Length: 428
Picture 1 (tube, one colour):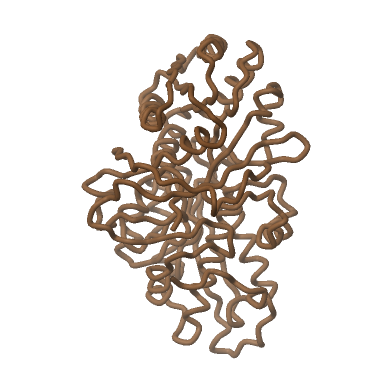
Picture 2 (picture 1 turned 180 degrees about the vertical axis):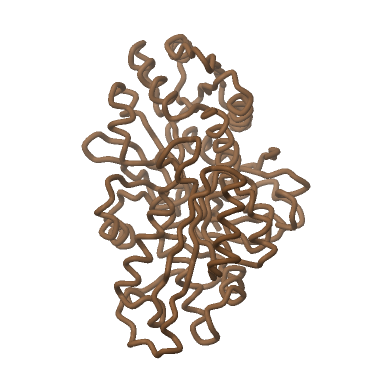
């Protein structure tokens, strides 16, 4: 089965944002959207789910709302078509403000007061309430692994799966593991040999940069390290250096604003690269605005992830997502992953229709949901509890490239873009 992109990027990248700012079948047939028979009085009660998002986090408005919006779009559409067995899904939203205190408040409200059956598409900057969710045995389905919670606690099922024991400690003895598939892809498919890594002189940024550098060196790259001052960054000097070193790729440990300024500086000095590589969180339709002053660098933007390109409307499942979300001002890969998380919950709830849609039944389905792919929107997801981390894994990834006038264009089939790569340890 395929492994998702490096957990290192997901965990360290989110920590950086905070500090910089201060075997079950996976396909849901079309019948799942068909109208259900009129519910009886006993079945008319809604199925209540909760969605926690850091909608007003210190990182900035909208940074963590994509999964929420995608999941809500799925449930809205599902309810119009009759819900689950004649029962509508009632969505309770909670904004935790990006803080641990706020997160615990949301967890208490949704679990203890609102009595939700499950959490769906959790996107929390500080998932402080994760242990409480686990102790209550509430399944958390398809959450974004911004921190280590989804590799720590049972009953939490991240959107990319997990092989860790999930016994209350992160990963294996406090260490998580991530692969080098992104770096292998650009070396094998595009002949890249030299990579620049640009970071701030700030602890989280520098730590993430070292992690990227380690992965690149493992894959045989010459690595050019560029560090700029956080308060007064000289991006032009960094851009000139990476140009002089002949960098093929540019990775970064910067915030969105820093990325845009770096791209502008690269255009100014004439630095041309094979790819300026970003991640799933920045795989959005806002690229023209974010990089409006860097047309050349913008044309070199690539994104990697673990889900089907939201622009790939030739795929029926993507087309359905886009039709349901056409009213949104912007589109993003995180929205598609939130939609997939809601699909996942729906599959679990439908499996419980005979015995009752309870927390325990939904959790039992999730614990057995090996190979779930949300009708092809996700790389097949695995949940195992391995006693020791694997030294290598066959990992797959989705890749897209930005094209002005066309948006993000998928590069190959994510189920076939696969490599056997080493797994590198890191401490979250």
